[in-house]
Amino acid sequence: MQRAKVYFEKQDDGTEVIVDRDTIIHVGDLASFGTDRGGKGLSCNPSHIISAIPATFINIRGNHDINNRVKSVCESMRTNLGRRFPNVSVSHYPSYDPHVGVNVKNGDIHICGHVHKKWKHCLDLDRQILNINVGVDVWNYKIITEEELI
Image 1 (cartoon, rainbow, N blue to C red):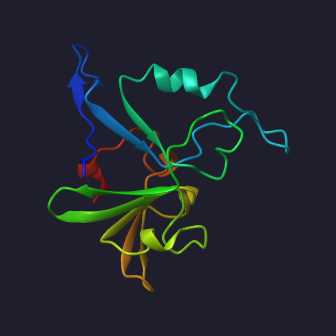
Image 2: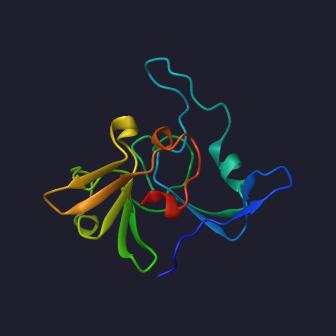
């Protein structure tokens, strides 16, 4: 199993940027073209944004990814966070959500989005899985590394 890792290079001005050996796993709801309630959406094709990122980009399907012209690779996946957590599941939904398949409901950690600002970490007591919400709204709208998750 290939391990997903984000690599950054520090620029002269102190900022860090993604480099081409990175793998970015996005947990869905990448972009929206607006809502039926009048919410403002993205005005360009999100595939153009993705193609400009110098990294391997894996988009897991979210509930708003149906009509946004972004190709989702899968509904869920497994990866690891080093030797400490060799069995990590990833999907758009938390492990306790009925949308999550059986293969996601067992592991050390489950990485998800979908719940917005409800929580950053949540223990699923029924399955004894720690859910980690990687939604941008709980991580100050920045890319997070695997070291920052735990």
